[in-house]
Length: 445
Ligand SMILES: [Fe+2]
Image 1: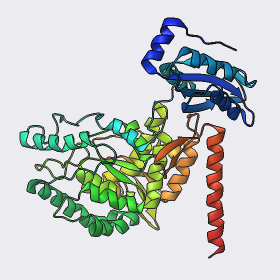
Image 2: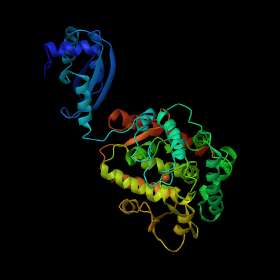
Image 3: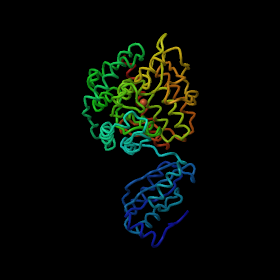
């Protein structure tokens, strides 16, 4: 057993600064083990303000605990430590600074990249964009147009300021912007019956009825987000520009899709070098209202949480060949469901012609396929259905190197890491109660 490691001035300074101490101790696995430790805290008459556990590295089987206590003096901390030491299954009692506690916790997950655990964690992405954002690249059609640049900046600033829980920004679009939308909308809308998948065609009229989709007005993402939430729980968030693949995919785990609100430059309504509201609202939005596609998208997102850079690249490639450029089989036809196709009349026609190569969607192969981003795709992947693609994706995800599994809790809108016996037991109980519900429902049919 180790005694208190830090003494004297350093300790006193720490106490004065924090008025709070984090205790660390390891406990051999035993029923009621934690109860005994908490009893020791009670005996020392201190309040506990936080407790975290993880499987122990030094006591196997066992757990490490980090417990914050509200202790004002060195004497009180020492008393707590002495009380906990009396518990015979406890090892290695000491106090650690909050920073040390954090570092220890991080090292225990072996360099797992940070990932959002709760919805408001997505706020950290608000100001992180890869390119475009507040500035435009020189080859953007609006780069030399100061009026366009100023207008785009105004819209981007609203996305930058947005935080979880606030109403989504409403944009008062100008007539010039509406005219651009109208040209894109009218041309694509006429093509959908021939080229779009049946799920897309089913949802589109609902968007016309519920979210003011039509040629004359650019729909507002607040209305769309509310509609999607009712359908599948998906919601939209405004974004300044292109997020990193990791951030973008991570948000899908929460059924959140980042949507731009500015529109392409009016000089060329049929071209944009970046995602704009035509791409998001016409290409992406309809399928987020489909339960099976929503599940596929979220599955990619969940797999991306804490994934290695190598696996993020694979998942981003899978997203590219599904949500962006995916094709699907419908009886004897092939149809488009990817947003990059459904928002581009030229590539939509090309993708469904005889010209490009079409392969069956297989995540292990699809994930490795190289692709161009500034020209039509030479290869497309065809899914049998969204459910089949999701099932294959789940199998593929099991081959990834991540040392833990996660699940999304829709009640708390948070991600749970299934890394302890307690959490896995709780998960098992929730499945059990769902199974009872399922059995009851089957019996009553
Ligand atoms: Fe996209």
